[in-house]
Length: 92
Image (cartoon, rainbow, N blue to C red; front, side, top):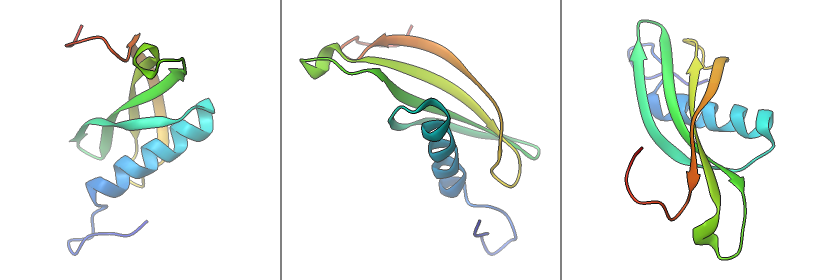
């Protein structure tokens, strides 16, 4: 994994690595990154995953996953924190 000039992995690469590993693990499409934070050497990335595709797309079911990665970008933990229809407004 590429490092920034100060020897640290770039946040966008951590987010991409999290999405790639979760997509492979779940066998479902990652729709996007909705959160990213770092605590010491551990990264936490929040991903939005397409869990159930429906017609119309506004009725798709999405899942929000909190993913933990180590300093090298390897997955160390993951859990679904929310499941909701795509068309649902707001958080909760």
